[in-house]
Amino acid sequence: MELAYTLVGDYYIPNLTFRDSPNDEPLGRYARLRRAYLREHRPILYNRLLLCEELFTHLREIDAAAENRLRTIADREQAHETILAELVYD
Image (tube, rainbow, N blue to C red; front, side, top):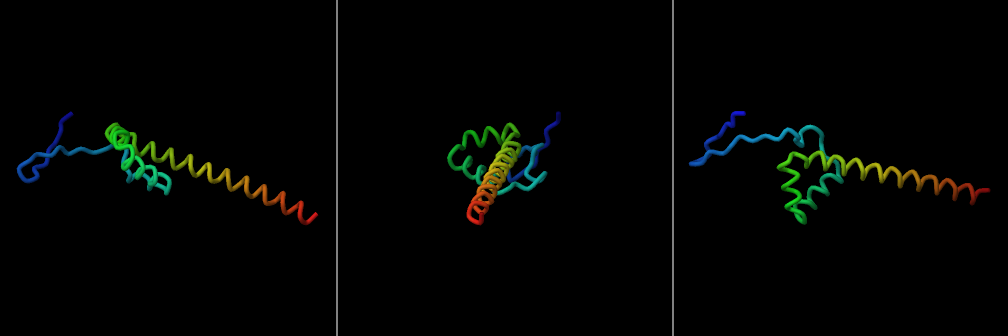
């Protein structure tokens, strides 16, 4: 594999690209919150995930799990409200 470089000032910087990029699919609210948390409070884990090209996969999994959890809570709340309405009006 040939590595290309770009001259920036007096330094050659390698042209690195990630296979798993944020451009594939926009990140949801909970993925962005998780990324901010990792950057601020867990920088070593954040850098490891980023360098191993697992960060965006991890963020998408977190976002999907959070959305699923919210959907479950909303469904349970709706069922609870339906039961309460039946008890009140019967």
